[in-house]
Structures are given as C-alpha cells and as structure tokens.
Length: 302
Image 1 (spheres, rainbow, N blue to C red):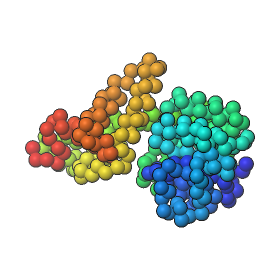
Image 2 (tube, rainbow, N blue to C red):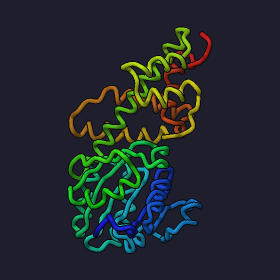
Image 3 (cartoon, helix red, strand yellow):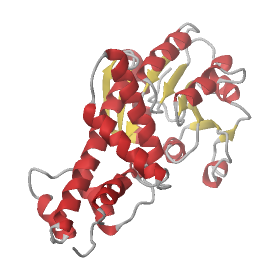
Image 4 (cartoon, rainbow, N blue to C red):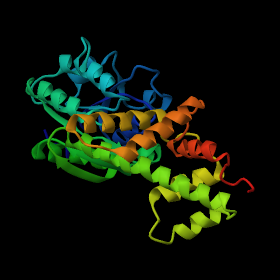
C-alpha cells in the first residue's frame, strides 16, 4: 500500500473533541474516510465526503488504515475486539493506528492480538490539544515497526508536525504518559509561582510577562499561566482526562516499582478540583486547589 497516493481509504473511529478535527484534516488532504462514533457525527464531517458506518467493524471492512481516537483503555479494547469491533472486519495486510492515550501495557497486548490477524499496529498518542488538532500541529509519539511507521507517516503529517518513532509497540504510549507527567507538574509549578506572586502583592500578569523572558519560560507558563491570570478555565483539556493519564502513570509506575511522588501530589490536586465540581475544567484549573488552600485567588487584592 502506497500512502503517497492522492486518495486512500482511511477509517476513523472516535469523533470527539480531538478526533473530529483530526479526521477533518485527513478529509482536507483528499483521502476517502469511513467513520464511526458512538455519539452524533459532527455536521461538518457528516456533510463532507466521509462515509458513515454503522459500527467499527464496517469501518475496518472498507478501509486499509484504521485510526482510533478514544477516551480510555476500555474504550479502545471495545472498539477493537467487541463483536462489531475493528478486529472483526480486518483482513490481512491492513493497519490499525490507535491515537488515544491509554495504558502502555494494554497497548502491547492489543498489538499482539492485531498482529496475530496478519495486520500491523501502531500506537500514536498525541500532544497539543484541540488547538493542535485544528491547526494540524500535533506532536505525535509513535510505537511500532519502522516500516509500518514510514508507510503511515504521510498521514501523520496531515495531522501533526513533530512526529517521532519512539520504539516498539507501547513505547508511544509510554512517551505520552511521560508527557502528561511533565505537563501536570509544570501546571502545578506555574500555579504555585503565580499564586505566590499575587499573594505577595505583585501583578501576576506582569510577573508572568517577566518570567516569559527567562529560564522559567515554558509553553505552560505562556498558555496556562494566562488562563490562571484571566480566570478562563473552559477546556482545553479536561481535568478528568488528565486524571486518567496520571492514573496510567501511577499504576504503571507501581507495576515497575518506581516512585513518582510529585505525580501523586498533582493527582491529589486534580482530585481536589473534582470535589469542587471541576472535573470538566481545563487542567490549568489545578491552580484552584492551591488557591483553596491559600484562601486566596490569583488577581485578588492582598
């Protein structure tokens, strides 16, 4: 199969916040899409050249490369291996690409089960959020065989910019979990810093501006620091989804005998936000848990 051709038969299962713009990028690139999602198909996808299928098996029967973008490990397992799942519609030589953020350990098992059907498997979770999906600037972390990666890479290039083959199956998911650890701890650090500065009487917006020119500069300080200052916590990336990713980190670390103390603290701060009704807040809303402990909000007069 040559992915450099103008038009390919592509399957896409999961048209949520991330999957919808990613699928739209593939349609824009001229590929024929076969789509399935449990909820209503977004209007602009339904009105495009994409073909709606009644289940995931129907997608796999029609497409040569099938992408999945789903919330969690059980969702991917159901989409792959249920009675009307992707595996039931596969024939030898097809490729499954899971772009969800799920368990690295489960991913290795899923890959073996798909390989046993004579098909290829890549795990290719992404970073960059809804904005990155809409702008086709996602970072894509891939696990799988080199030749399969090279075959699918032109399609990844329709959706992202920083595309890296990390290693074998499961290694893409491991890289994504590592990414989520770094992001969570950076949100916590930026939240502490801006809360400290604001409580001390400094203008948090100007402190953030000053820090952007120094060694403390980061994408989190740029994007989420602004959210904290402006009090804009609409997602974005929901706290409940980041909690899921940190659960993957902590559970996998436990199985490996590795301690992740600050990751555990970040997870507890997210849990505190959920107790305030904030599971759907943007993950920058972690700062609200810190503010509750300080009895002070960023931007408030000391």
